[in-house]
Image 1: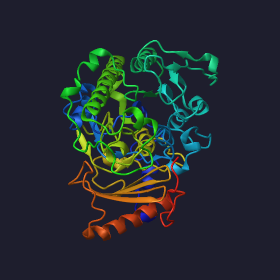
Image 2: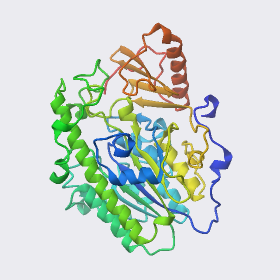
Image 3: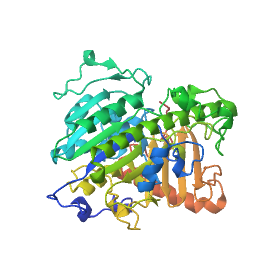
Image 4: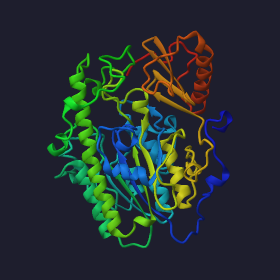
Length: 468
């Protein structure tokens, strides 16, 4: 992607700048992935209402990428391609079956670590096919091969070294999902006595709905005490193509302040309960004596509107839905550093390889974030692109963001100056003074679409003709 300056990389990074292939002791990796947690749903990241003491500690101990993005989705199940991009380092249109499965030629992150001698453990949600899971992990338990479920009755599998996950082996978990997966991670830490480094991938289904946090956590958030977001709207101002999808039908239109407060309260309760379970795993890591040589990563698979712009779901390209938490903490890394570097979830793959001194496999398109972790000011990327199905496209460069829509032939353009308008409330697209900027960003968007093999063509009047 270097022809347009969309990503900056170097041969040195591709060969593992920070550690040699024969270093004596590679770091362990503890990777937490949350489900539907937007970028600022952490107390330490300027959210005064949500209680997340354990995530806050990670913010204090590591580097927070405040502008981590997903690239979008070709389906309403945004988490599926998002997780596939995370696991393969590939871009959206280079996935197979929208991320529903990961073919053998697309090497996964845990698979690459496994080849390098790591023991790889996976628990929780795996939304990208049984075969890909089987070749990725040497250990595991309480594995959920799906997208969402009742948190008190998650259909799970025990780990099978032969990779055979037949339907008759599935059973229902006996605890709340976040507790179930955390218990499995804690057990792994208690029993692990191998000299080899490990990757622990703890993939939660919270705070995804159904939002049914235990009562003691729900009681922390009386709905009448919840602050409505500044960009709350009863309805989205136009048809974005997904106003009738499942996520948007969780509450009727027009949205009311009371209903949205109830949704936010339930969302925060799920996050606080999740935070407590993450804290249990972190304590188990400390107790194991392995914390000093463990890199901890916390990320989210996509954001969520929860009442912003008249929306509830993640099937849109506003900041609340395309930006996610990303925190990296560990030995020899800066503490309490917040970086506004533009990045993707797919950048985690090459970053981990560089941190562990492991070769980055062919096909990985992500850009290593190691320069940022080493304190360099140069950007890893100077722009960000995202797409949703065939009728929403977005590009951001600096503080300016352009979104284009074409739904059933009805086209809309939005231009936001995020430095002055972080809530995306003031559309400047029709301002005559911004006409040249709109054109420049449109041209950049077209370049991105060409380089990532986007099948849509903005020059065609019906580029987003149908809703799906």
